[in-house]
Amino acid sequence: MTIDIRKVTVLGTGVLGSQIAFQTAFSGFDVTAYDINDDALKAASERFEKLAAIYKGEVNGAGGGKAEKTASAITLTSDLAQAVRDADLVIEAVPEVLSIKQDTYTKLGEHAPERTIFATNSSSLLPSAMVEFTGRPDRFLALHFANQVWKFNTAEVMGTPATDPKVYKAVVDFATDIGMVPIELHKEKAGYVLNSLLIPLLNAAMDLGANGYADPETVDKTWRIATGAPAGPFQILDIVGLTTPYNMLVNGDENGKHLAKWLQDNYISKGKLGIASGEGFYKYGK
Ligand code: NAD
Image (cartoon, rainbow, N blue to C red):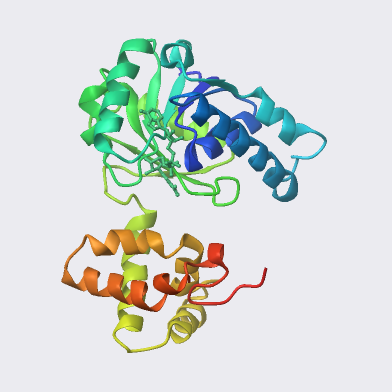
């Protein structure tokens, strides 16, 4: 029997949840978005309006009222039971805190129909850390999006040993149906594919800069010319924003702490946080 995904519920309407809900609705699916209270739902409506404006400017086919219609077509609720009672797929994008995720899956398992597939968008937690709380190990896996889903459209799909291959396949097909490029992992890996590649590259670049081997501009120029990549690691760091690597490094080993201090002393404390603040390793015009 093939698995049909038409009704999708997104849990958590923050940075990523709002984007996932919007992209899914924009692609013609029936979408419900859940968050914890009225304030969070109000913030969600505002995020959807902002996304509608962005889509109109940046995404093909978003004109003629489609972007606005997408925003208003998403059902918002703070009632979890109602949010998931008829869902084919639930995509969880609640805060990156294990206890919140586990609690969410415990409640979800009680309210969702047996057929419902659960997918976590967690960036740093493995699905096997949550699977025992879902009550449906065969219908649970990770579906990991990148920030700005309409533009950076990878969707990494990663199951646990217990994930049913038919469920995995259905989620890969769903990712394609909402305009993503599915990235299939055969087994669990912290950092998936992208961050397994990117984080060591960014750390190596910061090591060269912080220890005085070469300037950020030189590091980037080397990477661009010698590999043909459009951007170097410091340009990527400016896009990501410097506080994310800082937070990861400051809790790491001695070398990590050293890199974090370099970021803090030379950039973050001077308000140079990356593109979002107008300056990071490079200056950006308004
Ligand atoms: P966020 O803080 O922007 O949003 C979290 C949302 O969850 C908020 O709207 C909050 O009100 C809501 N929430 C809080 N407690 C909840 C609960 N008990 N049940 C349901 N909702 C609850 O976070 P985010 O950046 O959107 O991250 C969410 C998930 O997506 C995390 O697992 C993160 O690792 C992952 N992710 C984030 C990014 C990113 O760039 N921000 C990229 C890929 C994946």
